[in-house]
Structure formats: C-alpha cells, structure tokens
Image (cartoon, rainbow, N blue to C red; front, side, top):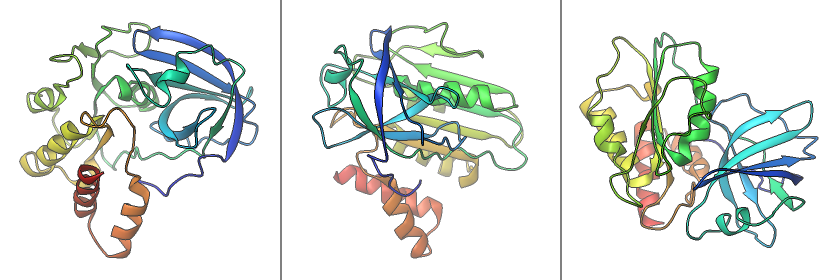
Amino acid sequence: MNARPDARAHSGTVTRREVLGDHLIRIAVGGLDAFRTTGVPDEWVALTVPGQFQTRYYTVRSWDPATHELVLDVVVHDEGLVTEWARTDCVGDVVGVSEPKGSFELPAGAGWVVLVGDLTALPAIARIGSAVDLPVTAYVETPDGPLEDYLDFPVTWVGPPAPGESGLADLVRSLDWPDGPGYFWMAGESAQMREIRRYVRHDLGMESAAYDVMGYWSGSRGRQRRAVDPGPIYAAGKAAGRTDEQIWDDYDQARGQA
C-alpha cells in the first residue's frame, strides 16, 4: 500500500495499440520523458483517458528508459471507463499517467515464489516471474485460454468456473505449498481475495511479510481496480499503531462498503 499518486503527474501520447486476446489490449504511451520506474515488479499507475476525470489503475507491463515508452495491458469487458476507449483506434490520444507505486517485496530468506491471479493480474505476474531469481510457481485464470507467448516461464492456465466468475479461492485452497519460507503474491476479484487473505493468515498461519493478496476489481460493482485507495487507509492505520493484518481488515471493510 502506498500514498495516492497524482493521476496527472505525466502527460503522454498513445503510440501503438495491439490486441493480445479477446479481453486484453496492449496500449503503449510515449513522450513520458520525466517518468521514473520504481523498479518494483508489480508497480501500477493511474491512467486518465480523454474525456474523463476519473482514473483507473493498471500494472506497468514494461518501461523503456531509452524511448520513454510505457506499456500497459488493459483488460476489457462489455463496458467500463477505459474499456470503451481502449476498443477505439486510440493511437494519437493524449492520456494522463501518475507516478508509479508498487508493493511487491520479498522477505529475507524466501526460497520460492507462488503467483496466482486472473487476467487483470497477468501483467504483474509476468514481471514478477521474470524479475525474481527464485523457483516460481504460477497460476493464471483467464477466459481467453492460454496466452502462450506472454510469459517467459512456466505457468498453469485455468479457465473460470463460469463467465464473470472466479475459482481462484478454491484453487489456492487446493495447492501443495513448497517447503520452507517463501512468498505468495495474488491479485484478482475482491471477494475472492478477502477469502484467500483470511485463509493464508488464519488457516496457513503465514506471516504478513510472506504474502501480498490484493483485490483488483469487484464482481458486484464491475472491474474497477483499486476503487478504494489503500494509501490513506494504510497511512491512518500506521499512525494509529495498527498491525498490517488489522489495516488489511480495515481495507476489506472499506471495499465492502464502497
């Protein structure tokens, strides 16, 4: 969790658009001369598209410091703030991009990494799996079927139980975990993430530093990433002396009321 980024910190121009799958569109933004990556593999930015004042959050798929080009892979659905725009010929459009923020942090002594997520988590899973020098086990749930050329490490592709639903919570409960200390990273539908956060914390007894489980979208309210900004909740919790587990409970409650 991090402080809220300035959604209009940078202005860039869409240089190319590529359809990667039925629900995944790649958008490249150039002209971001002052942009600086955090280097954190799950870093995200707030994107403001033309004609909108609201923002949506997307993982940075890649950043090229030589060309100042930022790549975002956008999940599209029947409707949505960015979905309708990304389906158009948006090359040449000017967009706003915030400073990046990230949360991935391997604990000392970790000997493995397990990554789980749906299509919205795929860009972060790709970056994390390529960045760490540890054995990686990855599972990705997608309605589009395997995207064979997307990852450069082994992954298990799974389909959702039904359109618009996720079975990731059941998948995680069925996992055989590697021996010894490691790190578990997961992102997807918020209700599923709340369930898994409770599972790894209470049933598996994982320390808070050993996992990061994030709700990227809400099944009941549409796929709007980080509809509740975690930054102020985290800052207030730390100021009040609350533990990370207690802060996550506060965040889950806020998302449930949003």
